Every structure is written in C-alpha cells, then in structure tokens.
Image (cartoon, rainbow, N blue to C red):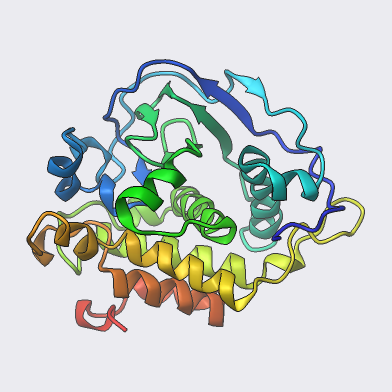
Amino acid sequence: MTFNPDADLSGNTTRRRGRTAAIAGGTGIGVLGLLALIAGPLLGIDLSGLVGGAAPSGGGGPAEGSVIENCDTGADANADVDCRMAGSQLALDAFWEDHVEGYRAPQLIVVDGSTPTACGTASNAVGPFFCPGDETVYIDPTFFQLMQQQFGATAGNLAQLYIVGHEWGHHIQYITGVMDQYPNNGTGPGSNGVRTELQADCYAGAWIGQMSKSTDPNGVPYLQPSTEEQRVDALNAAFAVGDDHIQEQSGFVNPESWTHGSSEQRQRWFAEGYATGLEACGQVFTLPADQLDP
C-alpha cells in the first residue's frame, strides 16, 4: 500500500480520453527507453518523432475527455490504477509547488486505447510521455502490463509512481527552461537527450524520497514512506528501461545510439535524487559524460 487510505483525492483534475485506434508517432518526451530510435525495430513502428522534445505537431488538446470517477480517497488509489494516476497528480503538484517558484501544473490524461495530442498520438504502444505542446502528461496504464511482459519489470505501485514522477520531471524541465538551455544535440551516452532523461529520473527519485511530506487539505499525507521492497521495484523499472537493456533484446548494444541512458545510469540518478534531493539533479548537465555512470 502506497497511499494513505484516508487521503483526500477528490480534488484531482485527471481526465480520461481515448477509445480510438492506436497510431504511433509524435514529439513528446517519454520515460521509457523503448521510445528511443533503437526500439523502433523491436516494436515495428517509427518512434523518431518522440526523441528530444521537438516542436508540437498539432492535434488534440488536454481539456477534452471525461473526469476520472470514484477516485476520492487514498484507498481508491491503492485499489485502482486509474485512481493511482489521479492521486499521483495531486501529490506531485503539492511537491513541486514547494520547490518551483511560479509552478504551473500540467494536465494528466489517462489514455484509454489511444488519443490525439499536440505531439501526435498517445497509446500504450508509444508509452507514457510529456507533451510540451499542450503541457500534458499522457499515460495508458495498460503499458505497465507491457513493461512486465516485454521488458522484465515488476512494475508495482511505486514503480508506476516513478514513471509518473519522471514525466512530471520533463514538465519541470520545460517550464524552468532546461529544455531550451540544453536542446537535443543527437544521441550518445553524453548527449543532452540522455542527460534530460537522467535528470527526470533524478527528479522522480527526489519526489519519492520526500513523498510522505506532501499533505491533502486536511493535513493528511497523500503517500506513505516507501519501503525497501518498493524502492527495489522502482529501481527494477529504471533498469528495465535502460537503452542497453532494451538493445540487448535485439542482439546488439551501441552506446552511440542511446537517447535515454543505460540501466545503471538510470538507477544511479534515481537513487541520487532519492538520497540527496533535488540539489543532486542539477549535476546531470555539468558532469563529464564518463561521470554520469555509477
């Protein structure tokens, strides 16, 4: 159990959109290594538009869709993955409001099948991603099942929150100017793309490390402190989505094609954020490439 059962989640603004045919593509920034160019042959689709946060390509906006219903308490979030996503929205907003001056919250859309976005089409084939064009995080919860089946991740509750926290990290990079300061400059272990992903992992770790400090309007913490078992599960998810781990499944490892970082790098920066907080995350863009490794 991750959420406090009595936490008030009734104020969430998470919405549901979808029930259309899945089409891959777009220009969002996703959490998973499978969104990188290297994963295209594995999935049989062209994911090149999802690498790096390019300009929006047009499409649906975040305001459409229906409200997620029956997600009023932490108990609902512990029992239902859609409510877990809705609860994470409140907890993440509360955390970042305390750490970013002038914080502007993103919209969170739970995708049912697929839906158009300002960055292309969101679906479980594409994976969770943040779209700068409409400042929205898109997540199809069935993707967690794909993580289990195709990438060997256990994808438990905290691992799912790590993924949402990673996408929120991309929103923070967008509104604070990090994406403009460090634009896409190609691939490779020291590229800005890899550093952007590692910093988002670090942001997610920092949030999880302090997740029990953010409270609902009644002063009840949204989330309980994580357990060692849950943190191992989150680290397992970080490992599963490393570029090298995904490349190994197709029979080759080419660091010069990396866009999200190796499994060890992703685990390292999640752990850095968890252990030392947001201060560590700024180092991602200043360290030499060989010092991004554990």
